[in-house]
Length: 204
Image 1 (tube, one colour):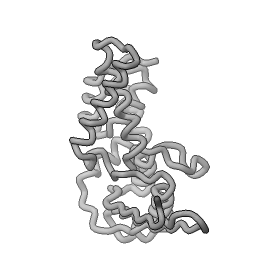
Image 2: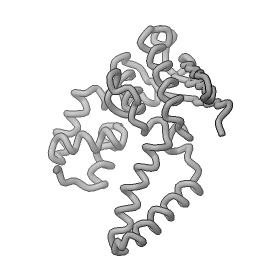
Image 3: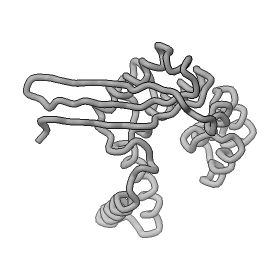
């Protein structure tokens, strides 16, 4: 396994504009070599896509998914997928991606769209619970912080849409965030998820 630090990940993010998970994956693929990792990101189109992230997104579509089944709750999901141009927003691949993400949200039921949306009080509470659990497991204090850092990522993967692994691996293998990024690379535009609304009737 490649050896690199959080500082190495931050340095690569700063030089390429890539996201944290992409920077980490690039360093893992290149044995921690910064130059090779930057080349890796460029080859994947990720660094180029990241540089487009500040471009204005004035277009987009609303992905829709409705699930109804006798004896089970009715679930409706709306997903806002934003793009720079109307040309991309009207493309079949873009519309299909928005609907696929809405379908995913209906199945996975994320509580938040992105990590920044999670209230600090909820993150703090989860970290406290993780730390307490680690102590109850007999873990020494000097490694509890590392355990918390690792397990809090699991919390995000369970509850944050962009961090969740897409439910249909036959259509895309990776997280929803990576799916959006792959779409941005393919379309050559700044694309992002802007809104999410989940309505469930008959639950509980």
